[in-house]
Length: 406
Image (cartoon, rainbow, N blue to C red; front, side):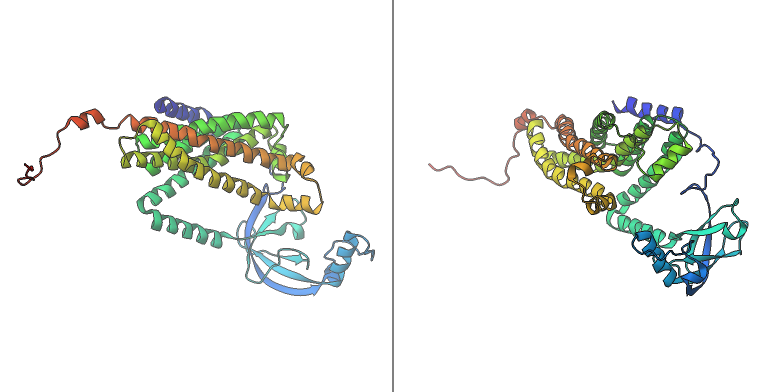
């Protein structure tokens, strides 16, 4: 079964291989703009009124939020930062950035930042600070993560890191460009997720019957997630176009099926947790068999499913909390607006997260009995013949033995 499946995945990769993301004219909106690295060389405090930081003359009307904010900015102290461009054709050029007192991001001298470049703007307004350069803490954190994985996991941990790198390459070189080229997001996600699953599981756990059972269990669960996701995304009329980022994608590439992109995200997002569940269940059944080779597949299944129930409770809770944590600012906005639970759940933003969470959780729950049953059937087929084992005479005891009483 796995050989035709692996062959189909390879064929899918070859047929759908995009050869890079398609080129497009930059819009200058969001992430779709030219950026350069820069450094804040000087910061001085100035009166906001002297630099007109609000961009307009305050009206003095503090009865509205806008008027109150403008009045506070006019009376407050702003920061006037001098920023030096460190990369690109304008390397060494400096410009001024005004930071208002109520901005969440404040600039400091010596701070490395990311600046956006707009060539069509007036020369004094071509550059503006858009973000902070976070490369060092991100690289440091990644290094700590890799070190922890290798120290605890040793060789298997190292192989897990290699598999993680390959998964990232599949995502960036195949899945994302193929979707941008106009391929069906669902088909691309299924092929890409299958390739990631095969590479990661066999690389981390080796070529064995145990790993193959985990692969089959994961595949069946992914198919269930795809079916449920397609059904409920369609029946709930979820468009997948709910924020600025998805709106920008739809504007740049109107041929992309945004609801299909949403379904692709559900499948790929569920894959990582599915791997964990199927591998754990398979290993549990194998260890039960090692401890008692005489157990039949029914007893192995019963024992394995008891372990799986504990796993289900923790994993589903983890998945729900992960999605809730990601949507926490959105939920906070609804709480501030004092919206009812029904209103919140009916909004497309929250409905997307609900469908994503519940579909993924159903797939996780289904993976436990499916994988446990497969593992029990496969491992019990290799058990020793108990009748032959019973016919082998017991070894004679050394010594003269015990005398029989008369």
